[in-house]
Image (cartoon, rainbow, N blue to C red; front, side, top):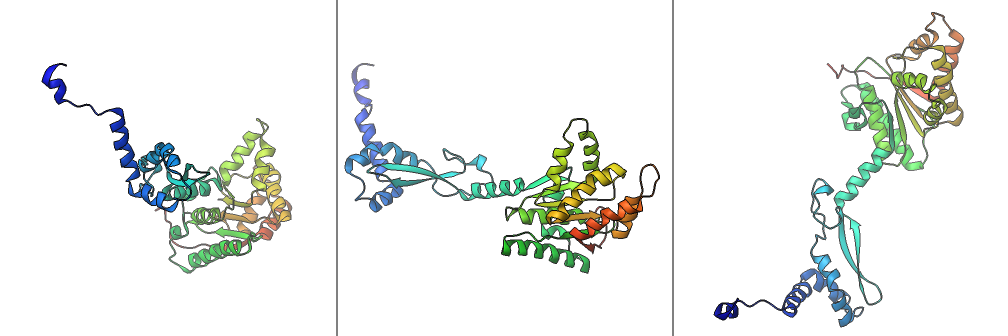
Length: 309
């Protein structure tokens, strides 16, 4: 480029660009507020050396933007906001979780406090408000569940007895377990929620891959165990005595809270447990199992209409 046109186009020098950037940084309201609070801690040279950090600071949001997912966050570290501090005549940037990141982490922590074995997702997302309190039995159950959580919160210890919820198909017994598990999860109490028919089928398969004892131990030692739909399974003497019997005996001995849902009341469940696949009636063994069930739970009948219709 030659002649008048070359003279007409003035390309800013490096020094000019640097000075413009420097003014933009130092005149930024957030930087000025920070420097005003730390005038005695930072020398002129220190401020000059830390201009890149100050620029990194002003190029990001310092408040949660209120997005519904931290994946949409535009900050350098998604879900984190920058905070300036001084350390020995220099500037440091700390990144702290924004409000949305805290909410997401809390939800993840809650989810990690609930171990599910074959339970539907909608059940595991239930809350106390999902119990559809429309008759006395539901009010009673909601109050009992809330009382269990409140005692845990106040004492830091779990009550030793759970509930045995029984009633017709579809009245929402499983949702009580999910709601209670979620409430306990907010207190960092872990629950293992098990759909009994599928669990017992899995135990039969576990014999072949040598994981039976590991899986039984995991369930029986759960801080809070929730067994859904007990009595819906095809019962064998082995699953009754070696699986359920082992679990219930351990939890009774260790005084670990257990919650059970069933279509059967205590007497009906005992009759079911007495029936074997071979057609035998084993009253004594069924009674032994029920003795443990009665020791670790309190029976509560759940009424209401079928919510699945």
